[in-house]
Image (cartoon, rainbow, N blue to C red; front, side, top):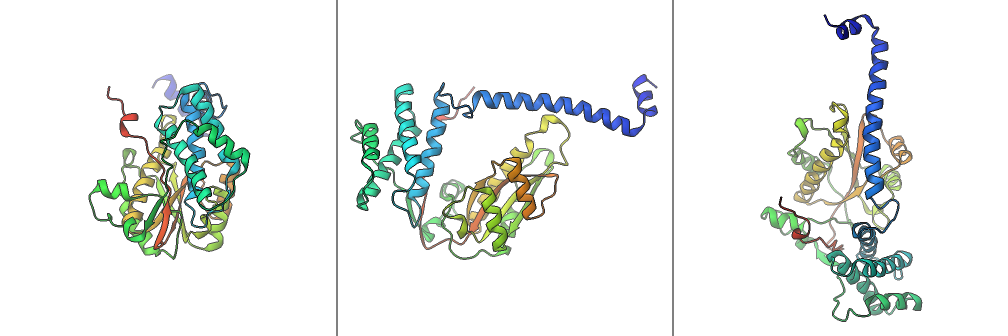
Length: 335
Protein backbone atom coordinates (compact mmCIF):
# COMPACT_ATOMS: atom_id res chain seq x y z
CA UNK A 1 0.00 0.00 0.00
CA UNK A 2 1.49 3.37 -1.00
CA UNK A 3 1.48 6.45 1.22
CA UNK A 4 -1.43 8.10 -0.61
CA UNK A 5 -3.69 5.10 -0.13
CA UNK A 6 -2.62 4.83 3.53
CA UNK A 7 -3.50 8.48 4.16
CA UNK A 8 -6.91 8.00 2.55
CA UNK A 9 -7.60 4.97 4.70
CA UNK A 10 -6.55 6.61 7.98
CA UNK A 11 -8.00 10.06 7.40
CA UNK A 12 -11.68 10.56 8.41
CA UNK A 13 -14.08 10.95 5.48
CA UNK A 14 -15.19 14.41 6.61
CA UNK A 15 -11.57 15.63 6.43
CA UNK A 16 -11.12 14.01 3.00
CA UNK A 17 -14.22 15.80 1.75
CA UNK A 18 -12.90 19.14 3.00
CA UNK A 19 -9.59 18.53 1.23
CA UNK A 20 -11.49 17.70 -1.99
CA UNK A 21 -13.55 20.88 -1.67
CA UNK A 22 -10.43 23.00 -1.20
CA UNK A 23 -8.76 21.32 -4.16
CA UNK A 24 -11.69 21.78 -6.53
CA UNK A 25 -12.38 25.32 -5.31
CA UNK A 26 -8.84 26.23 -6.30
CA UNK A 27 -9.28 24.57 -9.70
CA UNK A 28 -12.68 26.17 -10.32
CA UNK A 29 -11.38 29.64 -9.42
CA UNK A 30 -8.59 29.20 -11.98
CA UNK A 31 -11.01 27.99 -14.67
CA UNK A 32 -13.57 30.72 -14.08
CA UNK A 33 -10.89 33.41 -13.96
CA UNK A 34 -9.68 32.20 -17.35
CA UNK A 35 -13.26 32.41 -18.70
CA UNK A 36 -14.03 35.80 -17.15
CA UNK A 37 -10.72 37.35 -18.25
CA UNK A 38 -11.32 36.27 -21.86
CA UNK A 39 -14.91 37.49 -21.72
CA UNK A 40 -13.97 40.91 -20.36
CA UNK A 41 -11.15 41.31 -22.85
CA UNK A 42 -13.02 40.30 -26.00
CA UNK A 43 -16.70 41.02 -25.29
CA UNK A 44 -18.46 44.37 -25.53
CA UNK A 45 -18.93 44.67 -21.76
CA UNK A 46 -16.35 47.44 -21.40
CA UNK A 47 -17.56 49.17 -24.60
CA UNK A 48 -14.21 49.79 -26.29
CA UNK A 49 -14.68 50.18 -30.03
CA UNK A 50 -11.22 48.80 -30.74
CA UNK A 51 -12.45 46.29 -33.31
CA UNK A 52 -15.42 46.09 -35.69
CA UNK A 53 -16.98 43.02 -34.04
CA UNK A 54 -17.76 44.86 -30.81
CA UNK A 55 -19.38 47.86 -32.47
CA UNK A 56 -21.18 45.72 -35.04
CA UNK A 57 -22.57 43.55 -32.24
CA UNK A 58 -23.97 46.68 -30.61
CA UNK A 59 -25.51 47.79 -33.90
CA UNK A 60 -27.17 44.40 -34.49
CA UNK A 61 -28.76 44.39 -31.03
CA UNK A 62 -30.13 47.88 -31.63
CA UNK A 63 -31.45 47.35 -35.16
CA UNK A 64 -33.07 44.08 -34.07
CA UNK A 65 -34.95 45.93 -31.32
CA UNK A 66 -36.22 48.37 -33.96
CA UNK A 67 -37.29 45.68 -36.43
CA UNK A 68 -39.14 43.82 -33.67
CA UNK A 69 -41.11 47.00 -33.03
CA UNK A 70 -41.82 47.40 -36.75
CA UNK A 71 -43.25 43.87 -36.87
CA UNK A 72 -45.70 44.37 -34.00
CA UNK A 73 -49.35 44.05 -35.00
CA UNK A 74 -50.29 47.16 -33.01
CA UNK A 75 -47.11 49.13 -33.65
CA UNK A 76 -46.86 52.25 -31.53
CA UNK A 77 -45.84 55.12 -33.81
CA UNK A 78 -42.72 56.93 -32.64
CA UNK A 79 -41.56 53.92 -30.63
CA UNK A 80 -37.93 53.34 -29.66
CA UNK A 81 -36.62 56.85 -30.26
CA UNK A 82 -33.66 56.51 -27.87
CA UNK A 83 -32.67 53.14 -29.31
CA UNK A 84 -32.90 54.54 -32.83
CA UNK A 85 -30.71 57.53 -31.95
CA UNK A 86 -28.09 55.20 -30.47
CA UNK A 87 -28.30 53.00 -33.56
CA UNK A 88 -27.80 55.90 -35.96
CA UNK A 89 -24.89 57.31 -33.94
CA UNK A 90 -23.24 53.90 -33.75
CA UNK A 91 -23.66 53.44 -37.51
CA UNK A 92 -22.02 56.82 -38.13
CA UNK A 93 -19.15 55.82 -35.83
CA UNK A 94 -18.79 52.42 -37.54
CA UNK A 95 -18.73 54.08 -40.98
CA UNK A 96 -15.97 56.44 -39.86
CA UNK A 97 -13.87 53.76 -38.16
CA UNK A 98 -14.39 50.63 -40.24
CA UNK A 99 -16.05 51.57 -43.54
CA UNK A 100 -19.32 50.34 -45.02
CA UNK A 101 -18.57 46.88 -46.42
CA UNK A 102 -19.96 44.71 -43.63
CA UNK A 103 -23.26 43.05 -44.53
CA UNK A 104 -24.88 43.61 -41.13
CA UNK A 105 -23.94 47.31 -41.22
CA UNK A 106 -25.65 47.67 -44.59
CA UNK A 107 -28.75 45.94 -43.27
CA UNK A 108 -28.82 48.26 -40.24
CA UNK A 109 -29.09 51.19 -42.66
CA UNK A 110 -32.04 49.47 -44.34
CA UNK A 111 -33.83 49.08 -40.98
CA UNK A 112 -33.30 52.77 -40.22
CA UNK A 113 -34.68 53.63 -43.67
CA UNK A 114 -37.70 51.38 -43.04
CA UNK A 115 -38.40 53.13 -39.73
CA UNK A 116 -38.39 56.50 -41.48
CA UNK A 117 -40.49 55.23 -44.40
CA UNK A 118 -43.13 53.56 -42.22
CA UNK A 119 -43.65 56.73 -40.18
CA UNK A 120 -43.78 58.87 -43.32
CA UNK A 121 -46.42 56.58 -44.83
CA UNK A 122 -48.43 56.75 -41.61
CA UNK A 123 -48.13 60.57 -41.75
CA UNK A 124 -46.51 60.58 -38.31
CA UNK A 125 -44.11 63.48 -37.84
CA UNK A 126 -40.81 62.40 -36.35
CA UNK A 127 -38.87 65.10 -34.53
CA UNK A 128 -36.69 67.29 -36.75
CA UNK A 129 -33.46 66.46 -34.92
CA UNK A 130 -34.12 62.74 -35.44
CA UNK A 131 -34.85 63.20 -39.16
CA UNK A 132 -31.68 65.31 -39.53
CA UNK A 133 -29.61 62.59 -37.82
CA UNK A 134 -31.05 59.86 -40.05
CA UNK A 135 -30.53 61.96 -43.20
CA UNK A 136 -26.93 62.61 -42.20
CA UNK A 137 -26.28 58.87 -42.08
CA UNK A 138 -28.19 58.01 -45.26
CA UNK A 139 -27.03 61.06 -47.26
CA UNK A 140 -25.07 59.12 -49.91
CA UNK A 141 -27.28 56.03 -49.91
CA UNK A 142 -29.58 56.98 -52.78
CA UNK A 143 -30.04 53.35 -53.92
CA UNK A 144 -30.74 52.01 -50.44
CA UNK A 145 -33.85 49.82 -50.27
CA UNK A 146 -35.59 50.00 -46.88
CA UNK A 147 -35.92 46.64 -45.15
CA UNK A 148 -39.39 45.14 -44.89
CA UNK A 149 -40.66 42.94 -42.09
CA UNK A 150 -42.31 39.78 -43.37
CA UNK A 151 -46.10 39.72 -43.80
CA UNK A 152 -47.23 36.15 -43.31
CA UNK A 153 -50.35 34.00 -43.22
CA UNK A 154 -50.79 30.88 -41.15
CA UNK A 155 -50.94 28.83 -44.34
CA UNK A 156 -47.65 30.20 -45.70
CA UNK A 157 -45.95 29.87 -42.30
CA UNK A 158 -46.75 26.15 -42.22
CA UNK A 159 -46.52 25.34 -45.93
CA UNK A 160 -43.19 23.50 -45.62
CA UNK A 161 -43.97 21.53 -42.47
CA UNK A 162 -43.57 18.26 -44.39
CA UNK A 163 -41.10 19.45 -47.03
CA UNK A 164 -37.35 18.86 -47.29
CA UNK A 165 -35.29 19.91 -44.28
CA UNK A 166 -33.85 22.82 -46.27
CA UNK A 167 -37.32 24.29 -46.84
CA UNK A 168 -38.60 23.32 -43.38
CA UNK A 169 -35.64 24.93 -41.62
CA UNK A 170 -35.85 28.10 -43.71
CA UNK A 171 -39.59 28.38 -42.97
CA UNK A 172 -39.23 28.15 -39.18
CA UNK A 173 -38.94 31.61 -37.68
CA UNK A 174 -39.62 33.00 -34.25
CA UNK A 175 -43.29 33.91 -33.89
CA UNK A 176 -44.21 36.66 -31.44
CA UNK A 177 -47.86 37.24 -32.28
CA UNK A 178 -49.90 34.40 -30.77
CA UNK A 179 -53.60 33.76 -31.06
CA UNK A 180 -55.44 30.92 -29.37
CA UNK A 181 -54.32 28.00 -27.26
CA UNK A 182 -51.91 25.09 -27.61
CA UNK A 183 -52.73 21.56 -26.49
CA UNK A 184 -50.42 20.19 -23.82
CA UNK A 185 -50.52 16.88 -25.71
CA UNK A 186 -48.94 18.57 -28.75
CA UNK A 187 -46.16 20.05 -26.61
CA UNK A 188 -45.55 16.57 -25.20
CA UNK A 189 -45.25 15.24 -28.77
CA UNK A 190 -42.71 17.97 -29.53
CA UNK A 191 -40.69 17.16 -26.40
CA UNK A 192 -40.73 13.49 -27.37
CA UNK A 193 -39.42 14.33 -30.85
CA UNK A 194 -36.76 16.66 -29.41
CA UNK A 195 -35.35 13.71 -27.47
CA UNK A 196 -33.49 12.84 -30.68
CA UNK A 197 -31.02 15.61 -29.84
CA UNK A 198 -27.46 14.41 -29.24
CA UNK A 199 -25.76 15.02 -25.90
CA UNK A 200 -22.22 14.51 -24.65
CA UNK A 201 -21.71 10.91 -23.51
CA UNK A 202 -25.49 10.49 -23.93
CA UNK A 203 -26.03 12.05 -20.50
CA UNK A 204 -29.23 13.78 -21.68
CA UNK A 205 -29.19 16.61 -19.11
CA UNK A 206 -32.18 18.51 -20.56
CA UNK A 207 -35.31 18.93 -18.46
CA UNK A 208 -38.53 20.60 -19.62
CA UNK A 209 -41.05 22.53 -17.51
CA UNK A 210 -44.30 23.62 -19.16
CA UNK A 211 -46.09 26.54 -17.50
CA UNK A 212 -49.79 26.75 -18.35
CA UNK A 213 -51.34 28.65 -15.41
CA UNK A 214 -51.68 32.30 -16.47
CA UNK A 215 -50.39 33.84 -13.26
CA UNK A 216 -47.29 31.60 -13.29
CA UNK A 217 -46.62 32.55 -16.91
CA UNK A 218 -47.00 36.26 -16.10
CA UNK A 219 -44.57 36.07 -13.18
CA UNK A 220 -41.99 34.00 -15.08
CA UNK A 221 -42.04 36.33 -18.08
CA UNK A 222 -41.67 39.37 -15.81
CA UNK A 223 -38.45 37.86 -14.45
CA UNK A 224 -37.18 37.08 -17.96
CA UNK A 225 -37.93 40.68 -19.00
CA UNK A 226 -37.27 40.31 -22.74
CA UNK A 227 -40.78 39.76 -24.07
CA UNK A 228 -42.32 43.23 -24.00
CA UNK A 229 -45.18 43.68 -26.43
CA UNK A 230 -45.93 40.00 -27.00
CA UNK A 231 -45.23 37.93 -23.88
CA UNK A 232 -48.75 38.49 -22.56
CA UNK A 233 -50.10 36.66 -25.64
CA UNK A 234 -48.34 33.41 -24.70
CA UNK A 235 -50.61 30.46 -24.00
CA UNK A 236 -47.82 28.26 -22.61
CA UNK A 237 -44.24 28.93 -21.59
CA UNK A 238 -41.56 26.26 -21.66
CA UNK A 239 -38.64 26.60 -19.26
CA UNK A 240 -35.71 24.48 -20.40
CA UNK A 241 -33.12 23.47 -17.81
CA UNK A 242 -30.16 21.08 -17.70
CA UNK A 243 -29.17 18.75 -14.87
CA UNK A 244 -25.63 19.25 -13.51
CA UNK A 245 -25.40 15.90 -11.74
CA UNK A 246 -23.89 13.97 -14.66
CA UNK A 247 -20.85 16.20 -15.12
CA UNK A 248 -17.51 14.90 -13.91
CA UNK A 249 -14.89 17.66 -14.10
CA UNK A 250 -14.38 21.41 -14.38
CA UNK A 251 -13.42 20.88 -18.03
CA UNK A 252 -17.15 20.30 -18.61
CA UNK A 253 -18.26 23.56 -17.01
CA UNK A 254 -19.82 24.95 -20.21
CA UNK A 255 -21.16 21.67 -21.57
CA UNK A 256 -24.48 22.17 -19.79
CA UNK A 257 -25.16 25.17 -22.08
CA UNK A 258 -23.88 23.43 -25.21
CA UNK A 259 -26.12 20.41 -24.64
CA UNK A 260 -29.01 22.63 -23.55
CA UNK A 261 -28.61 24.74 -26.69
CA UNK A 262 -28.58 21.70 -28.97
CA UNK A 263 -31.72 20.40 -27.30
CA UNK A 264 -33.40 23.81 -27.48
CA UNK A 265 -32.96 24.03 -31.26
CA UNK A 266 -34.27 20.50 -31.69
CA UNK A 267 -37.27 21.42 -29.56
CA UNK A 268 -37.95 24.57 -31.62
CA UNK A 269 -37.94 22.49 -34.79
CA UNK A 270 -40.26 19.95 -33.14
CA UNK A 271 -42.68 22.68 -32.03
CA UNK A 272 -42.79 24.01 -35.58
CA UNK A 273 -43.36 20.49 -36.91
CA UNK A 274 -46.39 20.14 -34.66
CA UNK A 275 -47.61 23.58 -35.78
CA UNK A 276 -47.06 25.36 -32.48
CA UNK A 277 -46.05 29.01 -32.63
CA UNK A 278 -42.86 29.53 -30.62
CA UNK A 279 -40.29 32.17 -29.74
CA UNK A 280 -37.11 31.44 -27.74
CA UNK A 281 -36.47 33.86 -24.88
CA UNK A 282 -32.89 34.09 -23.70
CA UNK A 283 -32.02 33.58 -20.06
CA UNK A 284 -29.13 36.02 -19.60
CA UNK A 285 -29.97 36.39 -15.94
CA UNK A 286 -28.37 37.73 -12.79
CA UNK A 287 -28.19 35.49 -9.71
CA UNK A 288 -31.10 37.50 -8.27
CA UNK A 289 -33.26 36.78 -11.32
CA UNK A 290 -32.36 33.11 -11.22
CA UNK A 291 -33.34 32.84 -7.56
CA UNK A 292 -36.56 34.76 -8.17
CA UNK A 293 -37.58 32.36 -10.94
CA UNK A 294 -36.99 29.43 -8.60
CA UNK A 295 -39.38 31.05 -6.11
CA UNK A 296 -42.16 31.15 -8.71
CA UNK A 297 -42.17 27.40 -9.31
CA UNK A 298 -40.01 24.54 -8.13
CA UNK A 299 -36.84 23.94 -10.14
CA UNK A 300 -34.33 21.44 -8.77
CA UNK A 301 -31.31 23.18 -7.31
CA UNK A 302 -29.06 20.93 -9.40
CA UNK A 303 -30.58 22.20 -12.66
CA UNK A 304 -29.30 25.20 -14.62
CA UNK A 305 -31.86 27.30 -16.49
CA UNK A 306 -30.99 27.43 -20.21
CA UNK A 307 -33.81 29.48 -21.76
CA UNK A 308 -37.57 29.93 -22.04
CA UNK A 309 -39.81 29.39 -25.05
CA UNK A 310 -43.05 31.34 -25.40
CA UNK A 311 -45.73 29.27 -27.17
CA UNK A 312 -49.15 29.95 -28.60
CA UNK A 313 -51.55 29.43 -31.45
CA UNK A 314 -50.65 30.78 -34.89
CA UNK A 315 -52.81 33.72 -36.11
CA UNK A 316 -54.31 33.78 -39.60
CA UNK A 317 -52.29 36.92 -40.46
CA UNK A 318 -49.23 38.37 -38.76
CA UNK A 319 -45.74 39.78 -39.29
CA UNK A 320 -42.38 38.14 -38.72
CA UNK A 321 -39.14 39.96 -37.93
CA UNK A 322 -36.73 39.63 -40.84
CA UNK A 323 -33.70 38.94 -38.58
CA UNK A 324 -31.25 39.20 -41.48
CA UNK A 325 -28.62 36.44 -41.54
CA UNK A 326 -25.06 36.72 -42.81
CA UNK A 327 -24.18 34.78 -45.94
CA UNK A 328 -22.52 31.52 -44.97
CA UNK A 329 -19.32 32.53 -46.78
CA UNK A 330 -18.88 35.31 -44.23
CA UNK A 331 -18.62 32.88 -41.32
CA UNK A 332 -16.91 29.76 -42.69
CA UNK A 333 -13.15 29.21 -42.74
CA UNK A 334 -11.78 26.00 -44.23
CA UNK A 335 -8.43 25.04 -42.69
